[in-house]
Image (cartoon, rainbow, N blue to C red; front, side, top):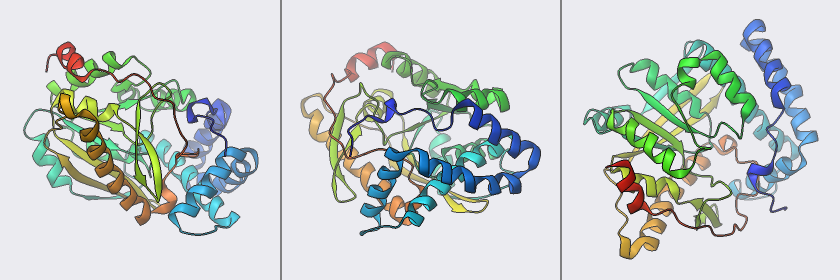
Length: 317
C-alpha cells in the first residue's frame, strides 16, 4: 500500500457533496437521507481507491481473514451513516436518536472536582454523539479539539448548523503552544476537553505499539498535554449500533498523567499501549466503526518532541 499520509488525501466529497447531503437530510428527512447513502457508498467505493484498499486491509486484520467487497461496502456505508447523523445531531440534538450511555456516573464524579477533564476518543463511530452529554448536562461545558483545515466543508456545516458549538471548537491547526493554552484555559474553567488520540498529524512525533497484530504508530502529543494539564483523563468511545442507535462509553484512564523527565520514552510507551489496548477492544466489539481510511500501520519519520515542561510553564499549570 502507498505510504501517502492521511493529511494529503482530499476531504471526501467536498463542499458540493456536503451541501447536497445536508439539503436532502434537512428537507427530505432522515429516511430519505439514509436511502441516499447507498449510491453515496457505491460512489465512494468506486472513486476512492486508496481508501477502499485501506478498508479491506484493516478489515482483514480485525476479522482475521479475507473479506469480500460487500464487507468493504458495509464499512464505507457505516462511515457515511455517521456523517449523515452528524447533521441531525447538530441540527436537532439527540431527539431523533437512541443514545445509551455507560460509565457516565464516573465522568460526573471526575467533573464534579472542578479541575476539568480530558476526554480522549478515536476515529470510531461518532464522536459527535458526545454532544448528547452536553445536552443532558447543560452545566457541563464541552470543548472539542478539531482540525478545521482538514475538513473545511464539514467545518462550515458545523458553524452554519450550530454556531454556538462551532464557537467552542479548539482549532488543532494552530501551533502546539496555542492549543495547549486554549486547553488549559478550558480546564481551568472546569470544562470537558475532548480530542482524538489515535491519529498523528504529519509533523507529530509518533511512537509504535502493538495494535491489531502489528506495530502501529500513535501520537504522543495527547499524553504530553495530559501530563502538562494534570487533570483526570477519561476515554470515550461513541459506538454506532445501526439505525438510530448509539452507545457512549466512558472509561476512567488516569487521575493524572505523569511522564518523568528521566524516563519519558518508557512512560509514553506504557500510556500509548494502554490506550491502544482499549481501542482495540472496542474495535473488535464494533469492527465496522473504525474510520481511518489509510494505511494506519505505515512507517512515519520522527519529528522533534515538544517539551512538556516548557508547555507547563507557558500555560501556568
